[in-house]
Amino acid sequence: MEEKLVTLAILTYSKAQILKNVLENEGIESYIHNVNQIQPVISAGVRVRIKESDLPRALKIVEDSSWLSDELGPEKESKPHRSNKILIPVDFSDYSMKACEFGFNFAAEIHAEVVLMHVYFSPVYMPNLQYATEGFGLPLEPEMGIKHVLDAVHNQLNGLTDRIKKKIGKGEFPDVKYTCLLHEGVPEEEILHYARTEKPLIIIMGTRGKGEKEMDLIGSVTAEIIDRSPTFVYAIPKSARQKNFKEIHKVAFITNFDQRDLVAFDSLITTFKDYNFEISFLNLNSDEQKRTWNEIKLAGIKEYFKKQYPQLAIGYSVIPEDNLLGNLDDYVKENQIDVLCISNYKRNVFARLFNPSIARKMLFHTHTPILVIK
Image 1 (cartoon, rainbow, N blue to C red):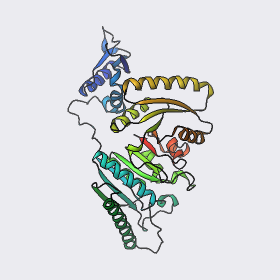
Image 2 (cartoon, one colour):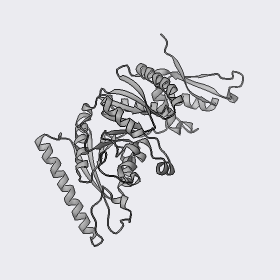
Image 3 (cartoon, helix red, strand yellow):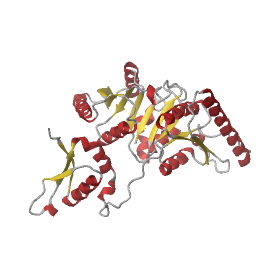
Image 4 (cartoon, rainbow, N blue to C red):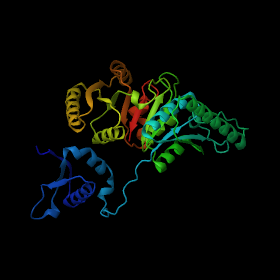
């Protein structure tokens, strides 16, 4: 039976031709429909259609606005792929050791390299902002000089590597290649700079669990990384049970029916194709009238993904938003969810300050790890 065609975009004829060429260069068969046969160049809008099975790959290409450029051609350099590195920011706490345990196990499974990164402040440049040093700095006093700071940081870093070597020797950590980086500056900015330039596969960070510390989330290093990272972020509360991805069986994927969720989900499945997750799609909704319609949408998403990924067990549910975090907690406990997956779209600074994302709200509320998909 011939595969169903779906409309990817409605564009002017010239832009549709550009998109068609880009898709075909990537091995995706495409068709242009509704063309004015007499004067095709002035068509008001033509449809670029593709096979349904190619939709996730095609949406990734559309998300990259570079295809709109008239200068795009076969010779244009493609976007660099992610490196085979796992970045673990460390602050020498138990939270960091939890992240190291998970990161080393994951690196062994996918034959990747671990990069341990610590960022410290020099007292000469240290700002007078409490949140900037929270979690990632040293208890610095004004009289401490730069040499004292560096000596203290190096001692702590050596202590961390000694602990890791002992755990590798005892078989508690797998023996994988790892390197240590020491940077001076603002932790979140240095971590993000490394992520943008080196493009690690994933950033794994330890976090405080529910009720361990009440604080302004704006000041959290992990929250900033979640909001602005160009790559996957896996945030692990200290109380999390899982030590590697093989122990993750049930994943809840939070969606608001944006097409970017489709791209994010395909990225999740492609990146972790060697792991067999049971997926539940969740929609957070406070409007009773919309809830029924959203359940219909979720059922449609479920059917679509069953066709695209027949190997996956997929379910769906609508979570009332009146008591968001409480209702989500109840759902996680009742359904024994191992990880919450969230696609965190790029948002401007005002949106981040005055309307924190769901990932940011949940960061210190739950005992469940959060996987943020980019």
